[in-house]
Length: 402
Image (cartoon, rainbow, N blue to C red; front, side, top):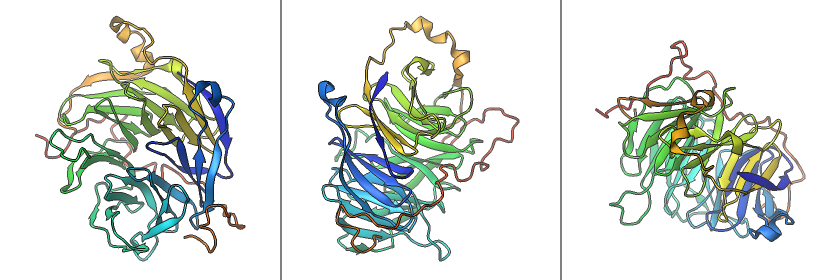
């Protein structure tokens, strides 16, 4: 499906990646604490193969590693969080920091951020290792914003591993989503900006790591490489599952492939695999699999405004170009062929959804001291939520969904 057109080496391990919503820009957060903004190659097919990724600016943004990155809704600001317990909001164009947030301490110790997400133009979602999920008002006009968030929730017993906005309802006047799904530990939760946690799943027996919306469906990836799929809003309907690969590599990051019912799955074995969720039985498109790296897993994955796929992991970033259509021309009658070998299952009935240092903000100066922190472990508590039922697939059920 995709051919690599550009490989970009980076100076230390990639910990965070964010793609601009409307321009061919890519933000990278590194283990060294550096944050850098990259200009992607031209989207013109005749030029892209001869182009390179250019650095717009770079800076030593955090003391310690950069844990998470996100752009705000219009892409004018880039928000970063580090192991130093500080969140910094900077101008995308220049990299200049406009404001900072001190993440609340946990037992008098720094509580590092796990995920950042700008849910609306006014609301920033910020989760931490202690399982807290904070809502901050981005309109707060302060050089160093208050450490007191507008809301605090704990949707999971473990840290939040992913945040995915749900599509806005037909009753939304603003066209903005006020609800989102989170994964954490071995559960899924649906949350509302006004009401907090709406529903939460039962223990799924394995760690849930990633999520995204594909063709009106919520797709969740797990440590065993299993995708769980539900139609948004129909949480008490049938769940679909598919094993992406037989060796159990974890599904660390998910991304929707354009408007197609296809989900790209970045895995810890270094491959990106594609799953067709538009069929009666989800199918892994093994023939379209691509490899990001032979050793390092895929930590960042997404699609820029021109439709090219961006994968990141280890000390490289790759840009991929689609070389043929998603539809392989197979007939509906062929759906059942080879499904057992692909690990697909379907039709299971469920009961419910079941700091900058001085001089480092000039956008170009780099700190002379390069930290060498230990590589971040994406799955920080691998034994939490393990299936104790002898390997039987756990049924997902949500409290309060009778």
